[in-house]
Amino acid sequence: MVERRTTGPRRKRRSSATLQRLETARQRRVEQLEREREKERRVDAALGPFAEAATAIEAAESRREDRIAAVEAQLERKLAELDRQRAAKVAECERHVEQVRADAEMEIAEWRSVLATSVAQIRSCEVGVADTAALLGISAKAVTALSRQAPDAAPVGTMAAEPESDDEGSATAPVDTAAAAELEPTVADGVAVLDAAEEPGPVGEAAEWSGEETD
Image: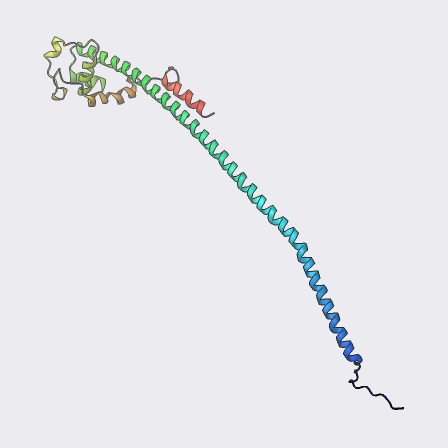
């Protein structure tokens, strides 16, 4: 019999070393894919908390801005109320000050009338301007001004014949305000000083009001 020969090439068998290398490469690929899948799982797991935290931060910032706006609005309301209270207190203080001044002016006018009457009485006793000024410790101009301010001031015969200093002026001249101003320190020195602790008046009222303000 004739032997049959194959016409195709023979298939070579791979060596065990080659198979081992291929298996090792395949295993590395499997392990790489597993690591990649693990990374994807870890990324997916991190996305949830990140999104939750970002949403919480936005909400916290929004609440913060709302609370700050509310506190600032409350502060503005309180400041406006304090401004209104301050304006009311200032107006009240000004009214008290005006009342104190008016009462003081009235009282001072009364005491100046007493001074004028006293000066007129001294002058009616034929006491000259210079002597009256020396007696009372005031200037001659102040004596003349007070003489004109006396309620019942009238020319006296003996006074008309008496020479006066050039500073006194004519009988029809207006009251010398500078001379009247010189009376204020004289009054303060003892002519008409009031004891505020014993005499009721605007000064005591002002002190009482001032005490109320300090409460």
